Image (cartoon, rainbow, N blue to C red; front, side, top):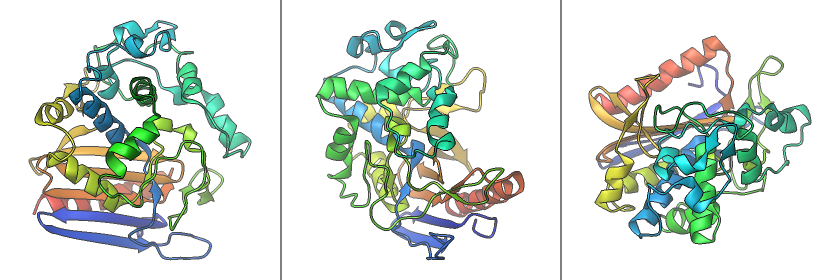
Length: 337
């Protein structure tokens, strides 16, 4: 991947009882500090897997039902321009079949960071959802399954409504601390990455490597603000698929798939997508945050895993294709042997 043009990459690989941590390239293009296996990164939408598991734990405790409507917990929050929280369930949020529009389509959110350079700008979850409510639904609830970050911002708000604690606090209490994920944090407002980390770079028409490491996590909230390492994410997903975090009924819910009607190749579980590599069922979640790209791929029984992170997004076409080929080679080396 480094040969293809990314500054640095770190990865964790599992094959049965054997595990490897890998690092290549640089953490910082200015100082040339080498990437290290325990460097932290912003995991982006891999965050959604943490949020989905907390929601399923709450269901297992009888504190909510996946069939509860959004309005049951957040009356009137998802409303306007044809959006209606009375017709959308928690399950629809988690598998992206709600039709709730994407808040990132609101250019004001991007402008608040990239046009002004105010990377400390804080958005509340309610503000992000209100931005989405300016748009009509992408489709009627339950008729398709297309990705929207707004789904998980709303899910995070529901977790707070149910527990009285923020989604960040619940993920920390229920997953990060019990599993000993020492390099994983879920910040709400702090724009810095504390401890050793990869610097994050944005490639665009003006810069090959624009440093965007300092960035408000409120930009992504429950949809993508977690900071972690490939090893910590692999530890979490291994614990999940080997039955340590959810009862069988809830793990069954997580792996129950809804298929997109407009893009049949999309098969969504709760927090993860279902795919196949060399005939093996794999549960996958990728994630992007300004400056970072990550992906986690785990076999259904947890015996094989690939989790990697690179410190760049927005690579131009030729580099992007070369990086994708390298990613596919890594996955096949683990899942096709």
